[in-house]
Length: 343
Image (cartoon, rainbow, N blue to C red; front, side, top):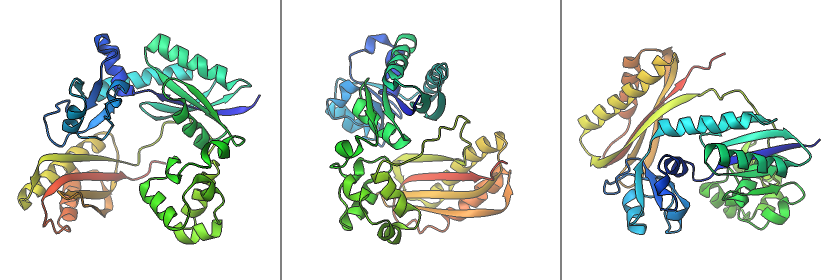
C-alpha cells in the first residue's frame, strides 16, 4: 500500500463550536471575536462563519468593521476552554483510525496513512466527524505535507482534494508565490523584485542565486517549496513549547512612561506566573512595542543565569522596555519568555 499524507482542517472551527452549542444559530452569520463586543475598539474577529464571510467579514478584521459589513451577525466572545475541549474530541476521533496523527493546532492535523484509497479514508473521517461530533472538516491528500496542506484549500468547505507531484505544476504553477504555504507578502515581494512571480518560476529558480539572495537555508528551501517538495514525517509526540507570550492591545493609546512600565510589569508577571507554575526555566525575555502608527519593534535580553523567579522576569522585561525611546503613543505591548530546553 502507498503512504499518503492527509491534512484534516476543521471548517470555520470556532464558529462551528458555537453553533454546536447553540443549534438555533445554524444558518445565521456568526462572528467570534476577542471580546464579542462590536462596539469596543481594537478588538478583532477570531473566526467568521461562512454566512458572515459572504458579507466580506474575515479573521483579523476589527469587530466594529465586521459589524458594519454584517449588521445582522451574532457576535460571540471567544471561549478558549470550549475550543480546546472540542479540539481534543476531534483529535481523539482521528486517532481511532489506522493512521498516525500530528496535531497542528485546535483545528488541524496531519495524518500518515498506508492505504490504496486515501479518498475513501478521507470520506470516512469526514463522515464520522460530522455524525459523531457535529462538526465539519475538509481533507487534503498529498504525497508531502506541503501538498496535503495546499490541497485542503481546494477542498474547502467540507470537501476532499488530492494534490501530488504529478498534478502539482498543473494546479499550482501559474499561481503567485504567495499561494504557497509559508510564503507571506513580504517574501513574495522580495521574490518579485528578483523576477520570481509564480510558483513555476520559483520552482525553476537557480538554487545558488536564491541562496545568495535569501541565505543558504531559506533560499534552497524556497525553491523546494516551489516544487511542492517537503516533509513527509508525521510526529505523534506533542510539540514541546519553546516559550510563552502575552500581548495586549489597549483600547486607548498609552503615552505616560510610568503607565507603560506598569503594563509591561503586569504582563511579565502574568506570563512568569504561568510558566514557573508549569515548571519551566526561563532563559530569554523579549518585549514587543507597537505604536499608534503600527510601527512594531521587538527587543530581547538573555538571562544569565536562567531563572525561575517571577520577579527576575519582571525586572528583565522592564530593562528591555527601557531601551525603547517610547516617543510615540503606544497601541500594543507584549512580553515573551523563552524556555531552557528540556532534555
